[in-house]
Amino acid sequence: MSRYFYWYVALAVLLGNPLNALAATDDDLQAIREQIQQLKQNYEQRISQLEQRLQQAEANSRQAESIAAQAQAAAQQPTRSGAVATSSESSFNPAVSLILSGTYGQFKQDTAVAATGFALNANNPGYTQGLSLKESELSIAANIDPQFRGAATFALAPAGGISVENAFVQSSALGNGFNLKMGRFFSGLGYLNEQHAHAWDFVDQPLVYRVLWDNQIGEDGLQLKWLAPTDMFVEVGGELGRGRGFPGTDRQNKNGAGAGVLFAHIGDDIGIEHSWRAGLSLHETRRVNAVSTGVPDLLNTAGGVSNSFSGDSRTAGLDFVWKYAPNGNLRERYLKLQGEYFRREESGLLTYNLATTDSYAVAQSGWYLQGVYQFMPAWRSGLRYDRLDPGIAAVGALNAGNVISNYAFNPSRLTWMVDYSPSEFSRLRLQLARDDSRQGLPDNQLFLQYIMSLGAHGAHQY
Image 1 (cartoon, one colour):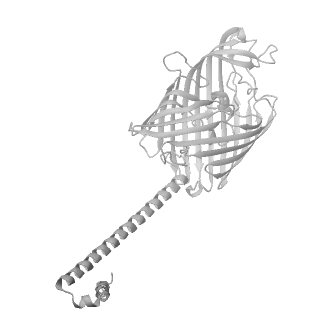
Image 2 (cartoon, one colour; image 1 turned 45 degrees about the vertical axis):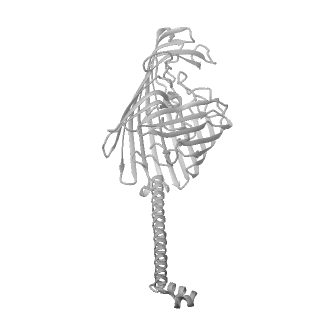
Image 3 (cartoon, one colour; image 1 turned 180 degrees about the horizontal axis):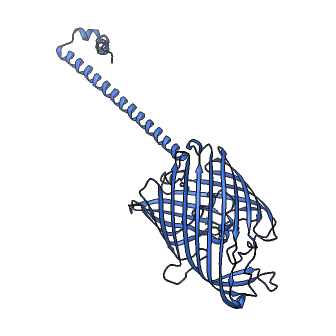
């Protein structure tokens, strides 16, 4: 403040009434001095308030810039387990998202015909001919309290109706690397199984997932994971469930568990450009009176017969994923290679055409290998190869002349796709496939797909 300010004020007061100034008494002069001092205090107080507001505004601006920078870095870089953060479910409570998707499918063969040698398995291709609305997905997630977090995903069927895809509570305060999940969830076996459909790199699942897991195995039960306190990613876990998902049989009105899963994953980063993860899975359940219709067995059964199987089902799997991003920048370019192998052994009793019962045992397997390359921002292309082995069945004497034990054919498929993602919330995809999964019925397939995400959606798995 100018040192002449107070003199200007005093002079203005005096000039305002010169006669009074000349006749001013000591009391008048003291009053003038007090007024000047009060003006000075008020002025300095006002300046101090303005300076405080300026400092607060600058601090808020720096904080906002820091949060924005952290959010951008989180969106571009993988987490310790490799998950790419797209948005935070804690940005508002609860986090709500809606996935909208649809396809156009063009192919010739009937999707009701199962892959050769897998008629006793599931046969849900997950796609239809022509234009069709795909399953919409409504998700809600939030922290419940310092100890628990909850999430639910509801599948809205194109023909109407709502089903519960996931609905679970997850612990957040067990400590020592332990995490407990309770409710309905996708099993942690393998690599693709825990991923929701909108996160798949192709329109459909690999053949091995279609025939062994009915595309994806969900469970009602408990899952316990342990994350090791090491620099390398080490995770082990187990599950107990009612066995509601294929190949199990839902245990209605029965105590105990109907299915069990054990899995282990390890992974690490190699510099800033490479990361990998490998896993081992074991699944065991029991099938009870599992009826398969349209089975193309012998003795002039062109339209198929209905067989029933009861017995034990045990599956072992291996999975591996490797990712590469030049300079660690996933937004510009990256390459992802992944593959999985599953082998299932089943043994029990087979009832042919719901009439003749005898022993039955078979070991079947399948695998896929795929690569996805983002060659420029927003654009990716991928190639996948699938192959199945129906195995050679051991059939009891009573059904030796009825049931085909050796199909001598390996179903396979080759798929190519290219997709465009204008943002993290939208994706458009073209897919072409040569399907040789049915002996003597090759098929050239074309698909167009859109996937749109509305609202806050959490990070995807590595």
